[in-house]
Structures are given as C-alpha cells and as structure tokens.
Length: 201
Ligand SMILES: [Zn+2]
Ligand SMILES: [Zn+2]
Image (cartoon, rainbow, N blue to C red; front, side, top):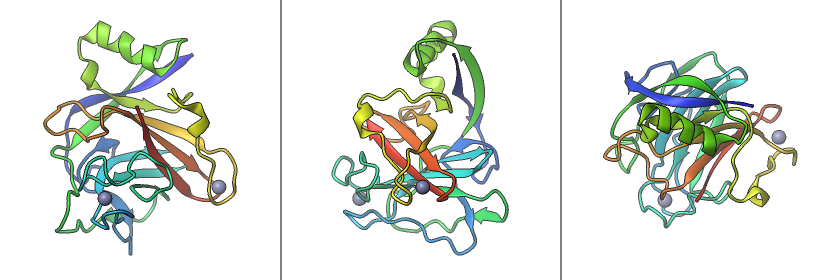
C-alpha cells in the first residue's frame, strides 16, 4: 500500500493557502483563537492542511511543554478544526503566549510504495534522500499507532474518526514544534465538522 508522505518544501508565506506548518491559520470570520485548558494561555498554531472535505487546522499548547495535557485528544491541551474551504481569512494572532512556530514550511507530497506502513515509508524516504527530518508526516492511509487503544472516537456522534495526517516535529530542530519526540495524529469527523489532534511517543 502506498503512503503519501508530506515533505518539507522550503519556506512559504505566513498566510499561504497550500499545505504548510507554521504561519498564520486561515479561519472563518469570528474565529476565537484556542486557549489551553490547563494554563489558559493561547495555543500554538502548528499546521494548515487543506483536504477534500475541508481545511484542517491544528493547534497545541506550547506555553509549558509537557505540563498541559497536550498529548491527549480531549483534555484541553490541543485543538484541531475542520473548516469549510470557503470564506477563510487570516486569524488575528494573540499577542501573548507561544502562538507561532519559528518558521513557515511549505509541504509537498511524495508517494512511497511501502507495504509496512508509515514508519517504514519514512525510513525508506530517509534512506533514499538522506533527509529523515524532511519528512513532515503523511496524509491519509492507515495511522501508525503506538497505542491503537487510544484511537479516539468523535465526541459528537461516538463514531470512529477518519485519520487525516501524521505530523512530525519539523524539518529544522530550531524552529520545529515540540512534540516531545513523539508523533502527532490528526483525525476528523466530517458529519460533525470536528477534528482532533493527539501525540503519541
Ligand atoms: Zn497550556
Ligand atoms: Zn462525529
């Protein structure tokens, strides 16, 4: 089965419409920037991922790394959204808190034929290209769970959620997200227009 890897493609503008990590999120008018359930600070924007069923926008708390339940899907330390494609505008970024990554990274996709799943596909790419950190994650396909039992169900309808993306920390350690060395998982429920983010390591 083929894995669609997300590959670092240089820097881009902070409000670019294409897939990227960092920059300014594109949001519906009237959007309220998410706050952490633990420290109540403004969250950090991680990724803008346009998909067929909407635009997925991913945030986590970076104000107090490791202390704010940012690993869990529903404990208030992170937030993801599934927005409709139309009518999105750049968000107003809060002036306080760790709200932005240190770089805006464009994402291109590369398909790797790899029967053994994401981790293996990532290693195949790294071996071939010599740049393991250039892999920013993957889109679609099957999630590579460390703990499958933590796969979340939608809190709206109780159904299994659709896997959207793996997210790695980033291309450059100086500007990457802090996922504690773990791997991020983005899932959505299209009927409920919901999205979640969690981290496993
Ligand atoms: Zn926090
Ligand atoms: Zn649902």
